[in-house]
Image 1 (cartoon, helix red, strand yellow):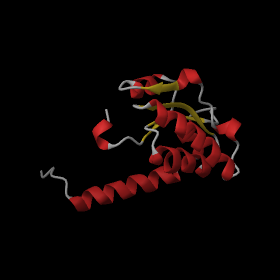
Image 2 (cartoon, helix red, strand yellow):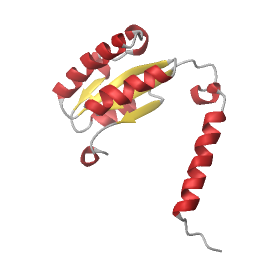
Image 3 (cartoon, helix red, strand yellow):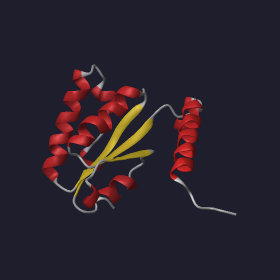
Length: 133
């Protein structure tokens, strides 16, 4: 039997899996009796503050950003302000989506571990490849 994976079979399988995920009821993504998806953000540069969390929150109700982490403290502080401003610009509720506290804001090389240790359901990883765990 030939178990070698070709590009064609990989793409075919990926498309089928993505299509199947889109057909699942919303409740399966959020879990039983849970209306919110708690998100952690690792990497607070441009990708994280724009495409990462803002597009995620705009695309689906019930998204809560609960933890943020980056190597540099100034990136986290800047990202916090940008995220709040972008949510307001899009007409989204800052108080319903932005739930980050000083206790769930992390910096340093171990920031990703601390974000993962929070009660997050999903993590958006937007760090450059050379800073990925």
